[in-house]
Amino acid sequence: MADLIEQYNSVVPVDQNYTYELLATVIDNLVAKYPYIEMGTIGRSVMGKDIYYLKLGKGTREVCYNASFHANENITTPVLLRFAEQLMEQYVAGDTVLGVYPRLLFEQFSLYLIPMVNPDGVDLVNGALTEGEYYSRAKSIGQQYPQISFPTGWKANIEGVDLNLQFPAGWENAKQIKFAQGYTKPAPRDYVGVAPLIAPESRAMYDFTIDHNFELILAYHTQGEVIYWKYLNYEPENSKRIAEYFGRVSGYTVEQTPIASGYAGYKDWFIESYDRPGYTIEAGLGINPLPMSQFEKIYRDNIGILLGGMTELP
Ligand SMILES: [Zn+2]
Image (tube, rainbow, N blue to C red; front, side, top):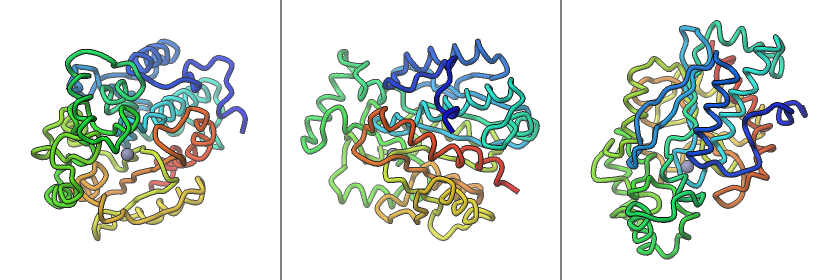
């Protein structure tokens, strides 16, 4: 299994925290090395940063994996980048990733990876944003929630809206629950916003999703080593079986979403809108942001899920 991580020629560093700048550099290097990868943007953040996507494969069947919806869960960004790199390495070599030929995947599927949904928030957490108007406003939001450490406890976008509470699937319920918990205004986490889809990052995910025909989505978060697969009583075909498969190959627990966080998330909206399998993967264990020293274990645990998101579809 050593070759999952240790590559002499890797252009995806896994020993440093990802900022937007590092992400942009790594994407440039990946695409330069593997022109087969298509890159583009799904929209822009509040501060005008590109929200990048990578597309691997030419197939007619589409799946979409995303990471770093939540600012301090950004160890998930290199998980997707390393996955892209590993697929390409083995594609070029004509070899397999854990028995799966990328060439065969790429004939059937178009795999869309969105490695950093929340670039402004990630930069705040990882120390790449330490001054200016946006930083000052975020800091004053943080000061109103002294129980949440700043900036490491920050999950929201730079304006204090939780991007994963912005989707039109039980948004009013999410609002009631989060307001009752005291998140009634912009906050480091758990503020639903004044209306669904007002945060440009969530809007971009929404628009990109409705412009495609995704058969399955994975939303990468940290932490808890848990896989959430349900929204209310929806039970899309194959969804439970694939969740159990994901649990077996990762060692993660498969659970129903707790009621307090059971609404207005991206996967909730995807399941409600399409009645297709959608998963929140809570990778890793500890206190967010998880240190990069956990990367190797997280990647090893998740490689079967990342492959299974395609190979387990009927
Ligand atoms: Zn999260």
